[in-house]
Image (cartoon, rainbow, N blue to C red; front, top):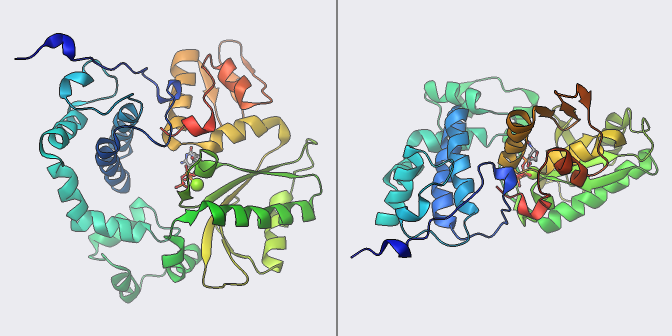
Length: 334
Ligand code: DCP
Ligand code: MG
């Protein structure tokens, strides 16, 4: 006998940037299942499906208790039919057939292995798979010419796929700090990305660099890079941002590092834009566009109605411009 009054449906705001999502939450099993399907969609170059699963996972992460019945999910945003089927499967059977068979599929495994190479994206991996290449050995035997980033990525494959710990991130932060102040005294380095959100491990270490005097940061990136190269640290640089470091004392260990330089007038936007999570960022931009007629980037915020850029010296001011409650980095883990 079902007592309807006992089923308390949860309530969650529509946009992930309106929710506080800490690293620890109450629905890890369900969120992990949906995240795996999101990852598989992203690896298959189906970003729309990927975002749909990410949004569904982020709703579950925001719930105040563990989900035990489908009835609790009534009225929640972002839960489409596909996500609901996966959730039901997990609640009924302890696991989802679709998730388990995806994990076991040759295609998913090959996509993981190949995109694990620094410089290889979903499209390249898919092309190789269509040629029957599923492993690093098969890739090497195929005679494909890899670009410089990919060659380096292959050479340091194991290192670059090893999660970076917070301790390593801090050690690298000291090196970057030293490089930056050596080439531009007074410049400031801020840890962004997952580590700023409180994660204890990450796939890379993200830093944002600025100088309190506008304009002084110009031309800083190449100088920082050449300082690091001279010290024997920097192995390879892909673009102005993606790069990775190799430790001088231990040539075996390589770590991905992302460096971003921002003029101080844009610093708050860059800080907000590079702290993540990726879904949180996407939702902030969606909120800005759809709800406020504003365009947000990691450089600026433009108000389409007023026809002007809105200045901000802090993340708090940007949230205020957007009409959102301030969410601290540790609760942006959507
Ligand atoms: N970012 C973004 N969109 C992208 C890439 C990055 O919004 N396509 C922003 C949000 C990310 C931040 O940059 O959180 C850093 O990118 P990472 O890929 O390093 O993401 P995280 O640091 O969050 O994760 P990890 O711990 O795996 O490094
Ligand atoms: Mg990161």
